[in-house]
Length: 104
Image (cartoon, rainbow, N blue to C red):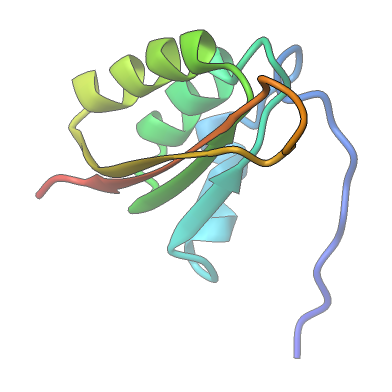
């Protein structure tokens, strides 16, 4: 069994590029991203370029989520579903969770 390497990385400032994502494609068919409030604009652009088949996106900011979702849809992804969750009972804060799949 191959050992996997863990890495802490600021994907907003230093996203994984498509060529760095390609080795993952041999092992994984999906990516799960949970970016900070600023979103994952650069990273979703590179995930789309790498043609990752499935992307699960968790967001704490509906505005940055909408911007990033637009990038994925423009790149040929289908937005399968979106769910808003009230994760913190006594605050107005919500989380957005969505599923994207590559169309075609």
